[in-house]
Length: 482
Image (tube, rainbow, N blue to C red; front, side, top):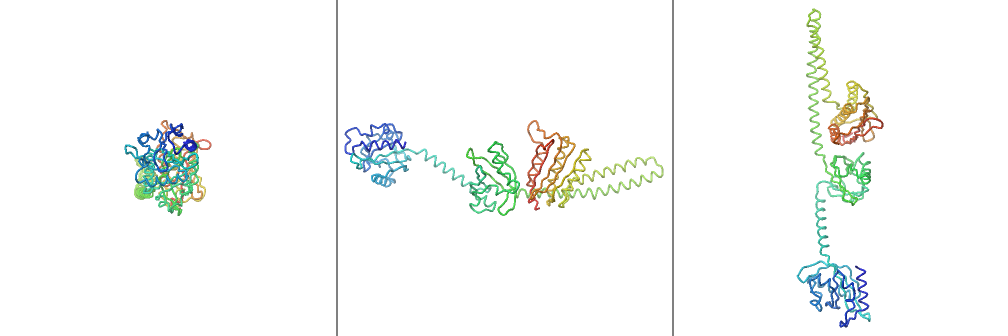
């Protein structure tokens, strides 16, 4: 349209006669003037309407005959008269006016937003003769812009007052925006996070894996973090770590992602307190079973054994029955001891997890008649009894699943210290992972994942390199203060 405006201006400038309108003006012979969708006005140098095209009649509701000879101010709100005079003066001086926003009034009194362009037309001697004004209605566009502006302001207000952290990142994982709650939550000052890779907010192992999540999602569309809420561990500026609930969504087709972060430290602390309370109760029950009922049963067994010896010496026939009674008492005592150990599998010492896993391997080998062993690499010290218990239960569930579903001949428990991480693994040589008919995960796997989330660990279940399955739990030592 701009080239059409220039073409019309050149035509009119070359052909118009400023002093005579007796003949058909040259601009009325132009197809552009006649068929343009924009309103076009021809004005004299003081602003009176000399001519207007059909689009101007449709746009403003005035006929050509009604406006010719009248001031263009008829269409201009009073508060814009001075601005209109200034534009006219600049145009008479030879300045091309392009894309000036303003408002105009229709015959019915409706106010419309317009985009104005003014050009000077000269006579045959090159002297200023007329001003040609293009008026493009942009009312709907302005309404859309206003609606978008208000929407952005509402979003920005929510963004700024939200108590949860909100960040936006691009396809490279670079932070493009972060709300004040993010800065408070992570201990950064205003603007410090902009331009940083989002992995700055993550401790190992999440820091090393994050870029791969985005890359795989963009390449395959398979969501591991994107669109999937999960609980992970975050890292503050001072290096301290804390648990968060993270939800990441893609902004449609803009190669941008929005992350919502909720600090769940208080909830985790409550869960830890409840878990430790349950552990205390189990520890108490374990001690009562071992020291109370166990001691009592030991005494009963000794009395029964003494009675058996006396009856045997006197040749009483009931001696064999008493011998059976002694046997059953001892078997019951052994069951009480096993229950007592099961209630508190991990001793509250740095090496307690290793001892408990060794006992698990020993019991599994004996009870299920297979080869189950523990392999330990490095000095593994879990100083949180609650976390150690969760790790033990994960191993216990993985072993149980392998025995029930994999039918293995060998199970290897692995416990490895790797820098700031501890890796617990359970590898079997059974028939491998079997998908359920409805695609749902079993209760055992869900329980293991839940336990891993409770201590800020990650859990993976995958086929082993040869046969069978390997379950791996990666635990950040920082979580236990170790």
